[in-house]
Image 1 (cartoon, rainbow, N blue to C red):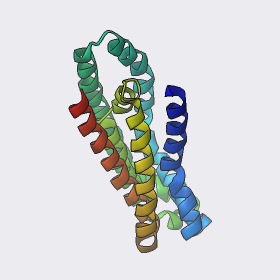
Image 2: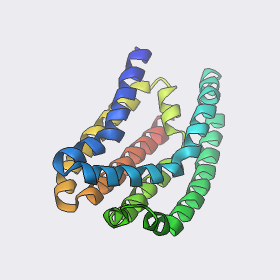
Image 3: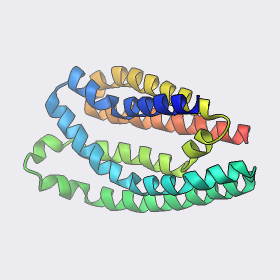
Length: 198
């Protein structure tokens, strides 16, 4: 049961976070998709420390659940959230300060005009995600692991609906805004759930 929910949760996660590119290509064109992909890649640099913290925290959280040490998980959650938020903000400030210069030296800089806005919107989404840090690990390694699967599926559905509404109106900026809204709501839901469940 755990393996099946974990497998489908991973599939849902890929769907939720990669659907933008497919929808931009379908609703707009491949050139816009290329601009969005480059800008999103730059913004995703902010989240690199999150992957390391998630890999480190998984075994610690599992061990703490086994010993029923919720205080330790609580401290880990707060400390990792604080540290990731500070580090994410520093990276975001560095990227925001230099992004226009970076785009200006690219070969097709005129086609990257919306790229700055996309980097900023997705960057804010990543900061919010970093501020809620190891919420996935806490949910996925607890007895409530099924909730993680349903949460990611709901996020994917919301992201698709938001993309259908926003891409025709705002083009690739709409896709970035849909990502920001859906990722923010997803993290708020998990934060509320963790607070109530534990």
